[in-house]
Length: 87
Image 1: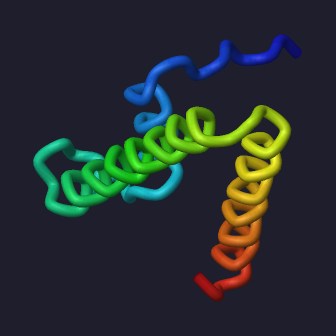
Image 2: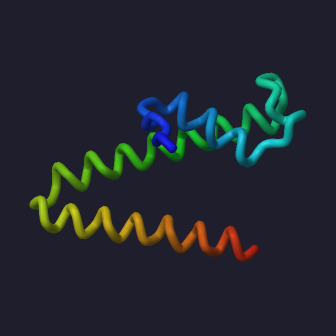
């Protein structure tokens, strides 16, 4: 089975994310839950991009990579908590 093409835009990432968490009724672009979730999604992505830029500008490569690995671990732990009903 061929691999799906990589997601290359935030709009593509949002569309995939929305399909996994919103109900069919909430998927209507004018729905309040759709609007609020999309705003939080994009703001979170923007905050992460800002952090990556600051880390890459402030630290040598090895240290920056370690900091980004720590953030990835934080995301992984949150995902586990979410799946286990603790988030």
